[in-house]
Image 1 (spheres, rainbow, N blue to C red):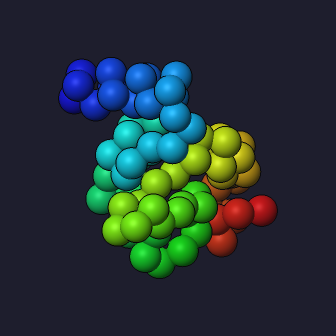
Image 2 (cartoon, helix red, strand yellow):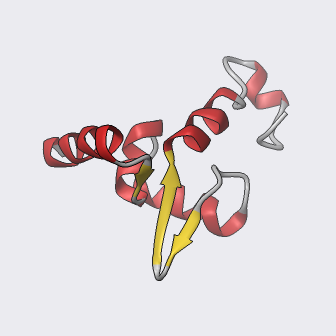
Image 3 (tube, rainbow, N blue to C red):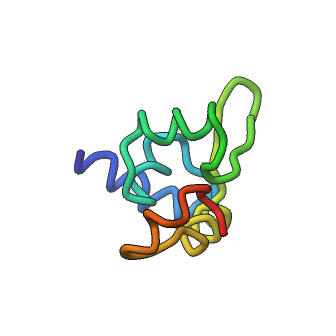
Length: 81
């Protein structure tokens, strides 16, 4: 897991794009959860670079800021406000 952390930190310094594993770590989700969100909708925006899925750090930050916090999260199950 430390290797993933280091790779995410290096990616943030060099490139604004993260792969699924790096993006999941960055927003505090499991990689599988992020993959499910990508398929079902409601997750952060992503891009396809050829056959590779990439997440832009700014879009991850924007998505994260838009998520409900605390006990209100149960009342707002639609995801984005």
